[in-house]
Amino acid sequence: MLHDNDTLMLGRHAFTSRFILGSGKYSLDLIRAAVENAGAQIITLALRRANSETDNILDHIPKGVTLLPNTSGARTAEEAVRIARLARECGCGDFVKIEIMRDSKYLLPDNYATVKATDILANEGFIVMPYMYPDLNTARDLVNAGAASIMPLGAPIGSNKGLATRDFIQILIDEIDLPVIVDAGIGKPSQACDAMEMGAAAVMANTAIATAGNIPAMAEAFKKAIEAGRTAYLSGLGRVIDKGAAASSPLTGFLDDETTR
Image (cartoon, rainbow, N blue to C red):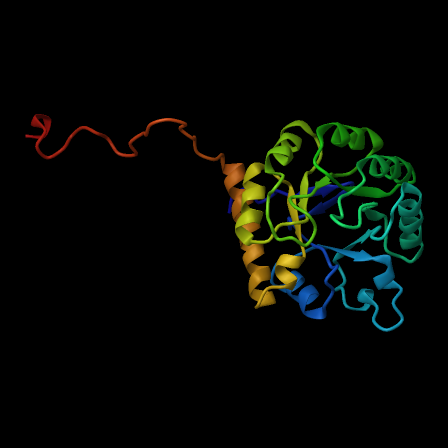
């Protein structure tokens, strides 16, 4: 296998898996498949899940898997900061995924508030992974605020539409010196592979696996697709010819060519 030492660095932590499970559509089968079949080393959780009186998600996440609490439900920077602090007090560690959404129809992130919350939490020692709409200026602001990565959406949450924002994500990959983790909207393993071939550092998925007919098989398909895309990117993709064609075999030396007689 190429690049055996290839790891995803988030803060001071190294990961060999580049698949992150979003657990919004929580089920034990999904978590089990993500760890056993997809090799996930990071799983998100909402604080309300961890505090559930009927079923605590923390009881079902295997040891050794890193928890990534998200600020789901926050509508302001202040609410996101409060949720992150509560998550750390509950023993969820220093990782936090910032999600701030004032828009209830399309669930698009509030980039301005996200930068504000990132700045506060990074200064408090959190490893901040902000979910954001792919905008270069916002991404630069997040770098300056101390983000450990940026997580641009591929398409609206839960839509399974794939890389609708592909061109803008590519700009971030080319211009931002942080891991770019494509989050939201990835619906197929082929789309995850495409994101990795672009140079994304990792892919987060939830709905695509949770709503699949065979959850373990789909989790494994995502693992293989992400690994293939990463290997292709590191190998250096072949050239693209805009016009015409280029023969892959020599155009000389045919059987009726005098040079072969």
